[in-house]
Image (cartoon, rainbow over all chains, first blue to last red; front, side, top):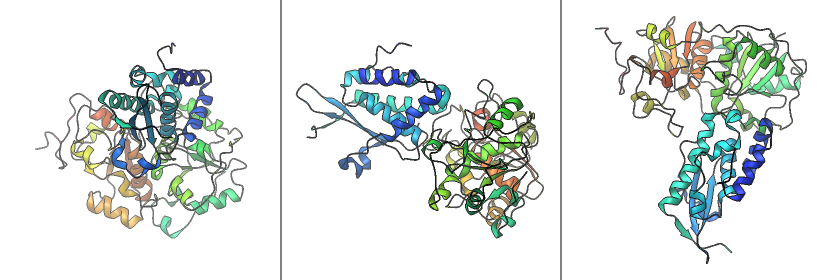
Length: 154
Length: 305
């Protein structure tokens, strides 16, 4: 399976998953679920700035912002999902590690079926994979639609 | 060899109290070492495929409703040989007492229990209140891997007829009581999937003619335990209109939420004939030339007047 269209960080994650057998892939997704960063303080108390991806099995909220830099905007991603939803958190964490800080063009170029390249479809089931595909789709739609601008944090 | 049945005031009122155990009972059974010889096997069955790995009841094994119990190719459950292999691998023998618990008020645990019952596993019980109650009471979880000594499980073919309804069965059943356990929005046809859940592709929204709407969660109290017998009777007999001896079919979207209701009707209220229609709305809503009713009224069986 080719991954040449993926940004470097995401391509590396996909390779990591593909190098493992199925039970180990689930274990890796679990590790990702643990490393999902919490929302920054300025977003924590502002649920109106987040939107829910209803296709996910468990409550998943996200927002996307454009961070201003001299050499152009960088897309910043923020996710929120409860600890009792490790699969959903794992998907969010993969997208965060693979896409946060990229340019809008790079994110829009990620193939929509990228989640299936992780090799989890059989272990997780297609039904559950839909949540991740929906998350990626929502991020791309938001990026394409124009983002709220923020200044880089120090 | 089976483990002794729990007796307490709440359970005694149910038609089949032997189908439930409390968190306190389970904690005691674990402390007494009942899981050591395979006479008791604790099974966690969750909606989230990774939740067990974040921490589970000590000694519990995991069975996933989708990857373990569903056949990959046909839209059906695994066969007798696969079930025997699965059970043995989880340390379950034919005479083991199996206690199942899970997330979301045991909704997926009840589904797993229903599948165990298709294979005629005699002693399978639900942990009343499930995973959330166990955690809320401050009882311990562990991420230690459970090493199950292989069980001895014979190949038993599924016996679907007593507790499983297919589309043709439901068509023949029209005129007898049906319970639709989905949300009011799904029942009326405003939407075809649960609020905040994935769209599973039903072409039409509505319900099976004459079905009563009783969302599954009404059978559960705030702490995820089943409501008491008088409370369940008020819901299913007084409100929904079931009467003793009725032949009932319950359905939802894919058969999981209705397993929770199936358990309440079959074991707590004691209806002998209760079947779960697992094809549910993803089949009925898409099927050619089967009748549906839109809106809040139950509607009538076509051609009945």
